[in-house]
Image (cartoon, rainbow, N blue to C red; front, side, top):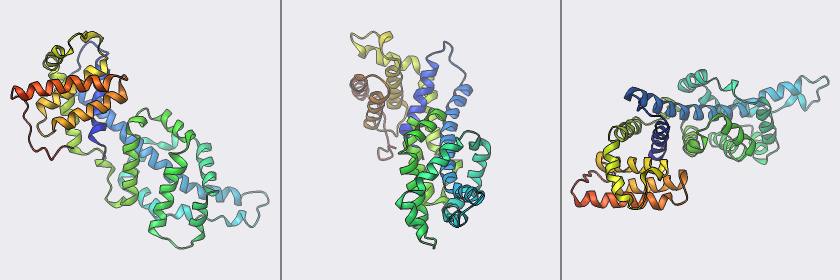
Amino acid sequence: MISRRNIRVKVMQVLYALSTIEETPASIRLKTQLDQHFEHTRDLFTYLTWFLTQVLRYTETYALQKASKHLPTEADLNINIKLAGNELLWQILEKEDFKKQVSRLKPESRTEPELLRKIHMQLLDTSVYKEYIANSKRDKQEERKIMEFILNDLLLANPVFLSHIGELFGNFDDDGESIVQLIGSLLQKPSSFSLDTLIDPEKEKFAHALLRTTVEKDKHLQSLIVPKLKNWDPDRIAVLDMIMMKMGVAEFLYFETIPPKVTLNEYIDLAKEYSTVQSGHFVNGILDSIRKELEEQGKLHKIDFKKNR
């Protein structure tokens, strides 16, 4: 499942979009905007998984093309199509939840056939592929390994493919790492993996609560942050820095099961990655100062620190 870090990024992105409009939308619209981000995550997972399956299935197309030549050779008529019969591949293709997502997304309309062909041709030249087809028997571990090889070495290590998927999915930089881990889980146990619960319900609930709380408590959160800015003009603070600080203070005050240290570390990392060079240090200083003040005032109520993620 996607991490709480990804959840925070999606909430931050919705809040940033809100900062560009004057009127705060109704809660139902906020929910819709956040749900769209989750849908984009599901789309990315579906497309990347689908493309992986098509690289394997292209073996059939390749064999047909060879056999259909005007004067096919014996080799042309005897192309090894073991890859297309990969048992793990068909476990995935026959999953009802995967078929439902593919039917909805229609990934075939987004792909580039020539890119698919080139990646398949690259595969045919690899020693990993040659070792795979050399063994006429089916081995579950080998079935999985060849799919992992295609994913990691021919897709994710391929600049052309990364450019292709980056153009289709603007959320790839944010979600890519989590999505790849999820595909790894799918390859390990396809029967127990569900696309319907790709977003953990508890994390989704946390996302909506964090978004709603940060919006509804905006003035109060700002009132705690501004006094800590000292010589800084609040209007000149980077928009993302202010958003992340508000989210952090919201977690301090209204999310009892998230330890302050976890909140601090998360927003320091996000500030470093998504804002300015100095933002990590700046956000850390402000949030830590507010945390100490809340503790001194007895307003920092936290429970069940072990349940921090």
